[in-house]
Image 1 (cartoon, helix red, strand yellow):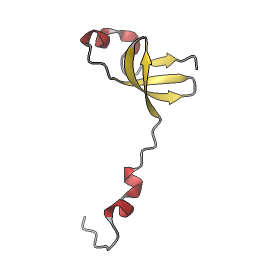
Image 2 (tube, helix red, strand yellow):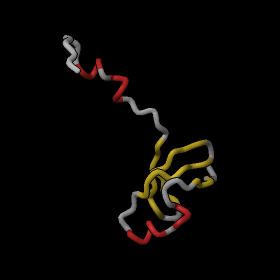
Image 3 (cartoon, rainbow, N blue to C red):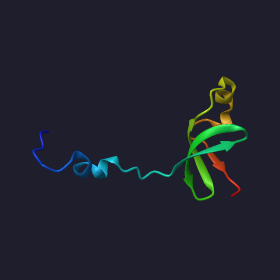
Length: 70
């Protein structure tokens, strides 16, 4: 697509650059995780740890829901 305009591309594509997700990095049982917050519950999106042993814990694998006491 070719778009002929004098407007800067930051203004034209502003809606595409906005992130509307509720992703947050937390530490759960000593493991850094990227989670999506849903009330007092968090769904694991990604394990941010560099320790290979953390990836073997089934309770923090991506897709798992964690109850948080906030």
